[in-house]
Amino acid sequence: MSRSDDGIVIVGASAAGLSAADGLREGGYTGPITLMDEEVEPGYDRPMLSKGLLAAKDTEPAALRTSDQLAAKGIDLLGGHGAVGLDVDRRLVVTSWGEAIPWEHVVLATGVAARPLVTTDGTPLPTLRTRADLATARSLAAGGRPVTLVGAGFIGLEVAAALRSRGVEVRVLSGCELPLASLVGDQVAGWLHQLHLAHGATFELGVPTASVTETAAGYDIHLADGRVRHAATVLAGIGTDPCTDWLIGSGVALDGGAVTDPAGRTNVPGVWAAGDVASTPDARLGRPRRFEHWTHAIEQGRSVGLNIARRDAVPYDAVPFVWTEQYGYTVHLLGERRPGDTDVVVEGHVTDGDFVVAHADAGELHGVTICGRVRALRVFKKLLRSGASLDDALSAATPA
Amino acid sequence: MTSVKVDPGRCTAYGLCVGIHPEVFNVPPGSPIAVVTREVLTPDDLEDVQEAIRACPAQALTLVEG
Ligand SMILES: Cc1cc2nc3c(=O)[nH]c(=O)nc-3n(C[C@H](O)[C@H](O)[C@H](O)COP(=O)(O)OP(=O)(O)OC[C@H]3O[C@@H](n4cnc5c(N)ncnc54)[C@H](O)[C@@H]3O)c2cc1C
Ligand code: SF4
Image (cartoon, rainbow over all chains, first blue to last red; front, side):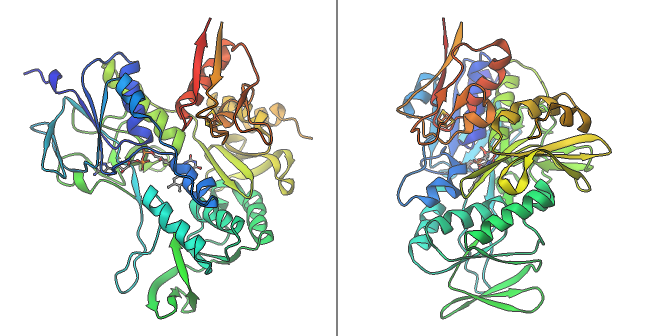
């Protein structure tokens, strides 16, 4: 039986899901496309939540698409419809309203959720992932009380910088010795850390948080070495978990996300995944892994849309591209630094916030971290795309 | 001839496009929108410009032919 009339259902209407819909139309698919999302108004500029939006007092996150743009492409958006189950035999998505939506192909684009940090009394502490979380974070910022951030990844550090720009007292707790060091190397991580200190953020590093208890004045944070820190308010940035609970038992292989091949296909025919929720085998690690970044979600989503439309299985393997913004400095990461890499300053000076640092091992270039030198971005992206060496990076650089 | 234009009503000047193709896009200090610094795109520009168009959170970029 042909199911082509059933069209394509995309679950999750953010970066990856919207791009998959665009990719389907770009690839020539003319059938029905239904995008569904549990958020009532899904699809907004998520990276800005921890940057300009938290620094500002009331600007709303920008919508990624207008209803006119969706209508022009014949894309139906069902906001406020969460997927609660996937039936791969009858090819149905079951929604939180009890509907059963049929599909010929389905794209899983449900992203990840902020990992909750829950007090011993069972209260989840605020995190920053959604539009609703922004409102909570803003009320913390406006409350005038010091904020303790648990976790010093990109989001924790961006939140720290945004809160400092609003004059909020900020303390960052993290189990790592030097935030972001594994991603950008010790020199750049050290410079960023100094930047935070110079702007008045304080840090307690090297000891993980063991538990949080509620007190009359706020919270007691129990560190793994037995010390206790009092906190008036807490915001947690301790990682993410894939939104795959609704897929448990469906038959779709789950391992740190929905497992896909490089083309975006899961183990179940007709079921694809893209964006933060997708977990793709990584030969070097020997297990599947997620890649949680904006342009990756967009490009991989589009690639899945194109593959479905063209009945193709083109692998997606672009050079990873990430950015972060702290205190007015935008740092770009291209490729990926690996454990044990040497970090070589190939342009400028790290302490000036104007540099290109190459991450390499035995002459093999794995990634670069760039700040202030936008011209270098494309030069090094091309080098990484072509599998260039550290020597190639050195000769492409303009050191001054 | 292909060029790219910025919709001033949508652009928020955050500069994601600049990170993807800094030779074509720029956000000058104080500018409320991104500006296009290369009038006519070369074939080598196209792939990255198209990526910038897709990545732009405001959907403020469009290709113009002719
Ligand atoms: C604060 C913050 C700052 C960031 N900054 C950067 C940055 O500077 N640079 C960068 O590269 N990346 C950044 N990221 C990461 C980037 O935002 C993500 O990689 C990107 O949003 C992933 O897109 P996605 O579509 O895969 O998933 P998401 O954006 O997470 O979207 C998933 C969608 O699925 C919906 N959904 C989930 N479960 C269900 C369900 N069961 N049924 C229906 N709908 C469901 C959700 O409501 C959501 O709309 C940041 C993320 C955050 C949270
Ligand atoms: S990415 Fe879009 S919104 Fe941002 S500066 Fe460029 S054109 Fe403007």
